[in-house]
Structures are given as C-alpha cells and as structure tokens.
Image 1 (tube, each protein chain N blue to C red):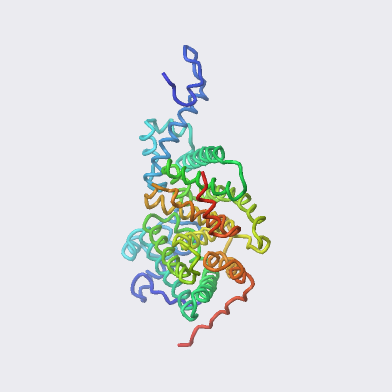
Image 2: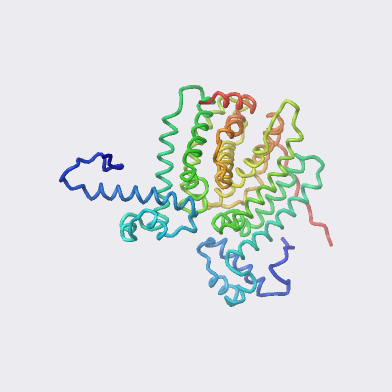
Length: 218
Length: 218
C-alpha cells in the first residue's frame, strides 16, 4: 500500500526517512526496550547526531512515528466510515477498513499496538487519547437507544479498551493480526451489543464483509 | 510485644531463627516496599536503588533474594494477586451465578479502593513491564474466563454468542479499572458496579437485569 504520511521532516530528507524506517523495523522486530539509538543509526547508515537533530530522543522518535502511523490508520478508517449514512453501518465499514490496514501493515501494527505499551509516558498518553477518540465515535450509539434503555458512556470506553487489549494479547502471545478481518463480525457484535437488541447484534455475526474499496485514481 | 509476619510464629528466646525464616521476612519487607515504589514511580522509572532505600536494606541483600528488578516485580505481582484473590474468594456468598458474579465484582472494587497501589501493580504496571509481566497479567485475566462462560447457560442465545465475548468483557473491565487508577480516582469505586455488572452479566441476562442484581450485591 502506498504511504501518504509525511516523514518527520521535509520529504526530501532521506536521512530522516531512513531513520524512521530503521526504527520501525527494529522496534517491531526486537521490541522498544531492546532497541537502542545506536542500532537505529547503524541500520539507517546515519550518525547519532543526525538522529538527535531529526527526532530528539528515542522516546520522542517513538511518539512522532506513532502519531504519523495513527493518522494514516484513522484517515483510512474514517474515510470508509463517512461513506455510510448510519452509525452502525459506518462503524462496520470503518472496522473493516481499519482491520485491513492493520493486516496490511504488520510492522506498524506491532509498533502502535504492542510496543507503545512500554515506550514511556508520553507514548502511553497518546495511546489513551487515540482510544478515547475511537470511544467517542462508538458512544454515538447511545443516540440509537430506545427510551427505556440506558447505556452509560463508560460502555464505549470499555469496549474500545477491550478490543485494544484483545489485539495486544494476540501480538504479545507471539501471534499476528493476519486474520483480523475475519474477526470483525465478532468485534462488531461486541461493539454494538449494548446499543441494539440481542437479535440485532447477532446479525453482525452473519453479515457479509464490507467490500474493500479501490483507491480513487488521482 | 507483637512480632511482625513470619517472626510471630517463632519462639522468642535464645534459639536462633533459621536462615529461611530471616530471608522470608526480608523478602516480605522488600516486596511491601517495592509495591509502593513500583506503583508510585512506575516500573520503567524504578531502580533497584529506589527499592533498596524504601526497604531500608542493602543492594547485596536485595540480590541475595531477587535476580533483579524484573524478578522483584514479578514477585510483587504474584503476591498482590494471590492475596487479593484469597480475600475475594473468602468474601463470596452462596447464590446463583449472576449474584455471585456481581458479588465478586463488588469485592474486586473494594480491593482496588482499599489497596490502590497494589491494584496499580496488577492493572497499570504489569501490562507495560515486559513480556513476562504481560504474560502473568494475561494469565490472571484468563483465570476469570471459565467462570464467566458459565453465564452462557442462562442466555437464550447462549450457543450463538461469539467465542471472544468473555475475553472482551474481562478486558473491558480491566480497562475501566485501569482508567480509574491512572486518573487517581479510586474513591467510591462501588459506583462502577452497575456498569461492570452490565458489561459482564448483561450479555446473558440483559443489562437492566444485571443492574438490578448489582444493586443487591453485598
């Protein structure tokens, strides 16, 4: 998939691009804590001073790359979501688009889903912010509720947190997320069940997958 | 005079305490101190010097009892889980599955409120303290799954429910507790009981019924 995110500095700064790629490779491959700035620089063919100029510290570099990748992920999921009219259809389209992005970007997914957990306080705060953003969208489901039904906003947070934990556990257990698209019906059931009745939620398990959209030609 | 912990069971007099007894006492003292240090500073920011200073012991004594910071953290984790689980199990009343589930939740919430630092070890620090800690954390969450799955027998559509439903419920619960701990909001934890009951019991009996049962929980 072609990348559309801007690197940390001007696009023609090849050193920055190489450092970024090296950090993604190493962190996804050996883990954040086992990745040193020296190793990143060695792999990128750059000096430690250049790393400091481009990113500052290792923790800053992680956060910068994390935010760029998250932006790409959100752009893909949100554009799929916006095509649909209703909350639930939008959620489903976004879930499939997001799952396909994760499936197609295993290195970036490992970086952003698993390694972010041990990458320092700033990265942890960014992760929390992302999950709250996703929960805010899910929470729109409360507008669908019948009058006699009550769902607290905490539900959306719990569901998004739960799905995030489920992805972490698959990666931490040595697995990958290659089958994530197949899991979307189950995740959709879990996500919508508090907001719709049981029968309706079960429909999610048998619905056909939302087809993959072709990228528009420029 | 009341002697602390394991020493209390020893005869007082001229008899020498065994080396194992003294080590056990030292280990307990270091673990109690380390739980506070890890919880307040975070695993990543904690050094062995911090633990040694808090426990009023020496680096040599520390390494006589632990392989290093990670090993100490794992033992803190195991100690907190084991003690918490013992208290929770001892407090459970007789009753139907849903009543016992809500009572178990109420007991967990009391634990978090009474021992927020210990709860931080399990729910906040363990997932970010390396692969072995993450494995222990996952294993602890998994231990609730067989019990929760018993709820399927009460649901009219129990056979149709997706396999990851309970995993999502436990992960979502852990997420909400973690949010409270990270935000320092551990007063009035019982106010979460209706929501958590709706998350864990709701899929089988309906959210409204789950909240009703939660209101009667001890």
